[in-house]
Image 1 (cartoon, rainbow, N blue to C red):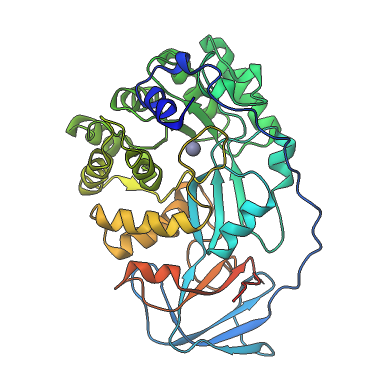
Image 2: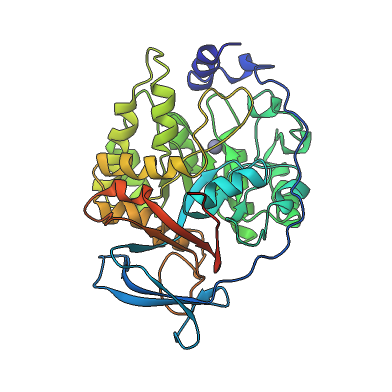
Length: 391
Ligand SMILES: [Zn+2]
């Protein structure tokens, strides 16, 4: 099936018709064991720090024992005159394949990535705790409907194809046992029935996990919100969200991960009925209503998916698109740092303060005045380990 046809079926909700649409995936690549690289013990001097609100006057920041230190005594000094230091960036929606994808993320300053579907759990585990590389969280395998596009992905476990609400609790329990950090559900029309999605939300919450909903149509988003999903990923490409839906996000404290980069990629395929203006229009409305918005890209290498945003580089594109959709530069930066850190409960990162994880990006310009400056990366540290950027 050509990519245009794939996209048409994906967005026109004819999920069952797409059976067999996805090519076989090559064997899963496992991470090679890594030796632990040395942690930096260094003080950046004359560096201007983004504190979550503004870029301040030149100061010093020490990196020691993987965290931001309290004292520069005895550390090596790097003169960072003219440069700006950001907290390591967080991509709230990726699909990881192997260590190479972690390296690409790290090289682009993305030091935390939220994997939104990965299996088997042993493979996801092999990508966790890679010293000097992007720190990950994962949904593990998502819940999906039998016959859906996802159900045809190679290796997709039959146990994740739900047909009744009674399967929700065991499904979530299995994810928790496997180490999933949150639960993901594919909401589509036609797709899983609303009572199954509701049961998944209840089960996830009973286990202290948030429910992530994949939803690409206005109808699917309404189902996800009604069912109690905590975060809704993607934005429709046919029509912007209506005021009632936007109000429901706000009233329920729901979070949007619009993945504008991915939506723009689909719109650029030139398929009638898919319009990027609808996706960006939804972000305008969500932002104006004060809904929490996170930067996420949907970076993936999934066989058969015609849009595959590049790991790391795409987050910088997402920041630009968020600014074009009305977020201020500071709001966009927060949507990729402190806001996702809080939304995912990662309170050790997202801000530059003594004691926080030393996930840091040193860039050549001031992104509060020019958002594209985030792409001018000079140095990156992941939990205090400097990533070797090639010049
Ligand atoms: Zn995705």
